[in-house]
Amino acid sequence: MQKDRKNDLCKYRMQNALESLDVAEDCFEKNHYKDAINRSYYAAFYAIKAILALEETDFKRHKDVVAYFNKTYVATDIFSKDTGRKIARLQQKREKSDYDDFYIASKEETTEQLEYAKTVIHEIERYLREKQ
Image 1 (cartoon, helix red, strand yellow):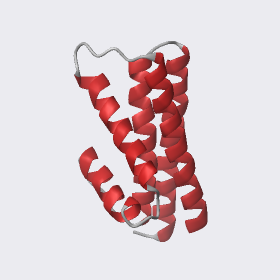
Image 2 (cartoon, one colour):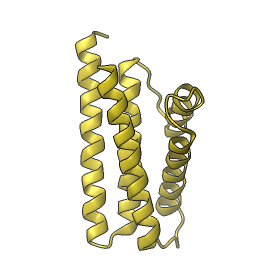
Image 3 (cartoon, one colour):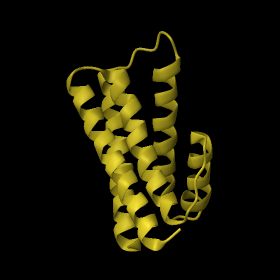
Image 4 (tube, one colour):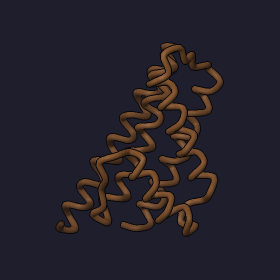
């Protein structure tokens, strides 16, 4: 893949991340906590995929994307272990809110999820600025 195309895909995925974060915040303001948790996770997920675009790596399954990111970027201290934990927590809460029939998301845990997503995205933005 050409360098311009990789950069374009990276930017596109980061734009998706930021839009998803914006939607998460809108959902939170309307007390749609389960939807806010879902969009918070996807915001971080798209940001991770932005990094993968630069190295022409992609996976079909979410767990593979996250596992690769953890192995390649968290385990090697490019990103902190805390970032890895936040991503894991985002993924766990998204799965609970999407798949557990009687799951009720609280305002407090949704706030935490939004903050985790913001932190992950900011760290990835900083990393991408340094790489480009």
